[in-house]
Length: 352
Ligand code: ADP
Image (tube, rainbow, N blue to C red; front, side, top):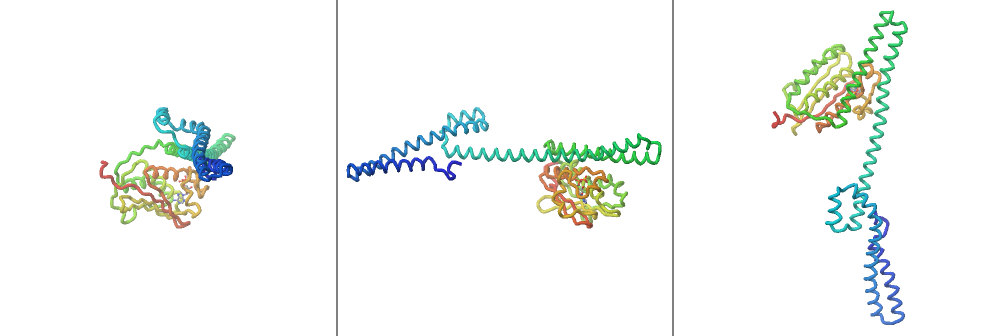
């Protein structure tokens, strides 16, 4: 900070001392005509003025930056550390102080950037959220108003409107549930309860619980051939259940009539298990692939809304997998299908 393009106190002292000593040395030679005495005067004067100028320059600069430094040190050090710094340690050199100030400034810059990012994120989140809430609430309001203003008397119409109302309320319930989940995950309250369990058993459970929804579209669910042998993983079973439910539910929602959802699991060489859910549905265009794990990001808004999606499912999956120290990924081709995959630790030998 102080020596980028500026002279250091050492350089200032040397230049000034040189200029003074040279002048006095030359004057001396001019009057005395003895170059030995002139040289000696030059050297002694150079040494004394260099030391004095350097000492006073450093003191002057140090006193001025001390105030700033004091403020920085106060915000960084505890009272005990401050006492130790002041009374026990030798006084810091200008270079050390300048390095600390630079480090402090860099740290503050990063903090400000982080705060700006959080602010932007908060704004976007609120915008998205109010948009997500508005649509079903206005729809419900519309149906109820129409029912009250006479439609209630026509049974067929009333039934249709009530069904639509119920569907919109279901969307709101899904949204509030997912919001609750994501806010817990993002506030760092997630405590993983890891245990050993067989991943195939969990998947069978999930296929079973979503079988009615799958049958409505005549979608088949199965475990890939060769992946039937039980594989034990070490993870938070309930959280992984949530991830798999989201992925299988999406595969049904964005899957075609008479489609097929396949689960596979492979043990990798480094004690990891690769888990994949593949579908032969509508697929995702390449430009969306790196954004679909963002909150409220959808590639097909109309279909997501129709299916009661909150747009938070994949963001929740990402949080959970990242909390396990792993990552989630996707491969997809439009009209061919999608594969979502993530890794987990394989069975722990120490845990029960
Ligand atoms: P949503 O509640 O809208 O399903 P998600 O976060 O679960 O929200 O998914 C985000 C978006 O990713 C979806 O709206 C959809 O556009 C796309 N998507 C997710 N899974 C699939 C899939 N298996 N096939 C095609 N598109 C998918």
